[in-house]
Each structure stands twice: as structure tokens, then as C-alpha cells.
Length: 452
Image (cartoon, rainbow, N blue to C red; front, top):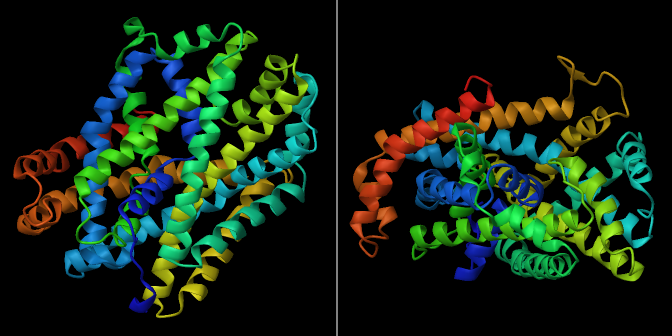
């Protein structure tokens, strides 16, 4: 089925599609909050250093594997390893992405529900009302499941059209739209009385807060923000042309991902501080705290508050969609290439599996008591499994495999685009892949397991 395996058509398509795979809901709530609590600008500087040490080298590693093989993740590792056990890394990436898409679609479905609720003006009320609204919706036996399925089907509709007509075309629309929405929300937020306190909270460097915990937070954020260890980057790189500059692309994608995360902070904190609310991290921020913040901040102009709420949840939905598209494509490419079926059939297999995972995840949040193991819901268990185990293990094995077992000449040719990129950068990258990345990923793993 190689005839169905397309290529990205333009350089901007490469950047926007791959950046979209990295930009997600975590950029909207996790990065801004961590920046604020971990020293503001001091954290941002440490984060940038972590991107240089781990993020960009890790991205390029997956780019090399994907572009060299021009195939799905499982087959890519098999080709490079000559059929040796290293191909398990590829299968691990496929499984990891399917699990993540299943439970990620639940939260993405919540975003769609809140977008509709904003349009109908159903989020108007005090903090207690907004909190109860979230509880009632998330524990409803039907609605969360329906929205989860709807979001996966929306993702399916994009992926089934192929690389150029589906993924690239929609990314060229979604990413600029996401950026425009974010800029509008930033302008509105920063124009509020007292917004300067929120800006200072985000950008004022407080080096007294910098300790080993802050450094570990920055390292983990760099790892998870760029979706390392999920085979997303490897799969998208399989659609790169031989002329794509891997180093330049990785730098641009990391820059876009970080910029959107910082802009998200400029959207959230000025509005929150203008009404003396210190936002929390996680789902409670975007589904409980912020609806009330926007309502209070723009209370004098109800129409503006109504528009801001709609724009915010439209932004979240777009950010979620750019991520789910990339995760869906991993499994789609795997199924149609390995089973020798059409892309459409491969996409449907991926969709059905993820819908099943999504249904159990959605119901476990509260609709069905005891749906889980070890006292955790199915959704929490899957989140723990992927974040704490599968992603770090996959990324660690990729670094070891590429740094020590793949022929150096192959790596040099791919990285330098056959001599068009400086060999000096190749030496630095190879050192990072062999020594820096494995150590950083091991630290992240131990951090996630609560050992350090």
C-alpha cells in the first residue's frame, strides 16, 4: 500500500503539522502554571536549556528513524535493526499512542461540550455553579461518552483523507487559527485592570525558587511537551522529503511549541490576577476555575465575557485536535501498511480501538463506580501507564538504539542531509543522543516513579 503513503507537500506544511502534534492541552494549562510556581522567567530559561539538551536532540532522533525508513513506526525500527529485538520499540510507540488517544479524547470531548455550553450561555453563574456543572457533566453516563466518540470521529475524518489532503491541509488551517485565537485572548486578558500582576507572576524571574525540583519539572515538561516516546514524530518524519532539514525543522517546531505555551500563560494569569484568583493546574483550571475567572474579569461587559469564553474553548478544541490527529495517524499507518489493507480500513481499525478505550475512560471518571484498578479510575491508570512507563521507556530505548547500534555513517547522512548541514552540529547531536538524552530520560523516569 505504498501508493497511499503520501509526503508533505510544503516546508510550512512540515512545520505546522509536526508542531501541531506537539501543541496540545498540556501547553494551555501545565506549562503556564509550572512557570508561575517555579520561578517565572527563571523556569523558562531552564526549560529552554532542557529543550536544547533533550527536546531537540530527541526530536531529531525520531526524525532520522522515520525519514530513513519512510514507513510506520514498527517497520521503521525493524528496518534499522535488521529484524532484531529493537523493533519492539516501534510496536511500543504504536500501543502507547493508541492508549493516549483513547483517554485524551475524553478531555478533548469535554472541551467540545464546554464550547457548546459557552455558545448557549450555560456557564454563567458563581464558582459553586461552575464547579457543580463540571461534576454533573463529567459523571453523566451518556454525554461524556458521546463527546469522546464525536472527537475521535472528527479526528478520523481528517486522517482518513491522507497526508497531504487531510493532515497537512487541516494543519495549515488549524495552527494559524489557533495562534490568532490565542493572540486575541492574550490581548483581552492583558488589557484588564491589574493584569500587570499576572504578567509579573509569569515573567519576573525568582531565582530563589530554583532548586532540583524546579529543574526536574523543566526537564519533564520539555520531554512531554514535544511528545517524545510516542512515535508521533517518527511517523510524521516518514512523510518528510529528502530535502527537509531535520535540525532546522526541530528548532522551529520546538520554538513554536514553547511560544504557544508562553502565550497561554499570558492569556491565563493576567485575567486570573485581575480578579485575585490564583489558578490551579490540571483539568480544574480549564473547566472550573477559568470559566469563573472570565465571568468575573469581564463582568462589566457581559457580551465580551461571552465571546471570550467561546474563543477560549474553541482554542482548546483546536489544540486538542492537532494532537489527536498525529496520534491517530501512528496507528493508521501501522495497520494499513502491516496488514496490507487500504488507508480507510486501517483508520477504522484505529478509530474503533480508540473509541473502546475512550468509552471505558469516560465512564470511569464518575459515571460507573469502581471502574478501574488499584483504587484508580481507568483513565488515571492509563495516564499513569503511558506517562510514567511507556513513554520514558520508549524514548530511552530509542536513544540507546540510535546512539550505539545504528551505523554512524547512516546517522551522519540523515542528520547533515548528505553534507548540507554542518558536521559539527552532528557531533554535538550524537553526543547528546549517546549520553545526555539517556541520562535525562532516566531521571524523568525516576521522577515519575517518585524515586527522586
